[in-house]
Image (cartoon, rainbow, N blue to C red; front, side, top):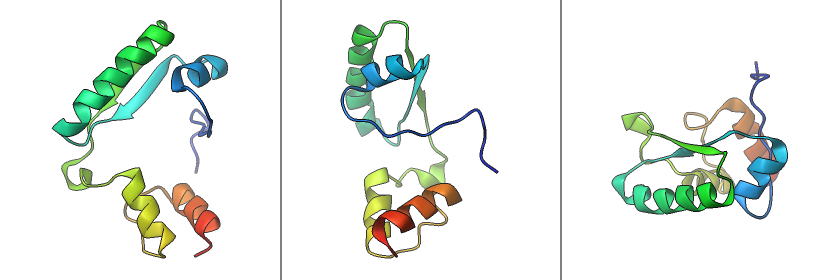
Length: 101
C-alpha cells in the first residue's frame, strides 16, 4: 500500500526551484560510493545557495544495493530485464508502462 505521506513527481528545471514550488523542506539524495560524494556535495551547496531554507540529507544504501543506479535500472528495464528485486512494485509498473515490456 502506498504511503500517503510520500509523493513522487517529475519536473524540469532546477531542483531547488521545484522544491520551493511544492513546499518541500528537505531534499533526499543517495550516496552509493565515495565517488558520488564530491558531485552531490557541490549540488547540495548550490541548492543551499538557491534555496537556503531547504536542507539536503544524504542516505547510504544497504551494502547489497550499492551497485544499483537509476540509469542502470532503466537500462535493464528498457531491454525487458527483471528489476523486481531492485525497485518498489510501483516503480516496476511505471517502468513496464514506459518501456512496454
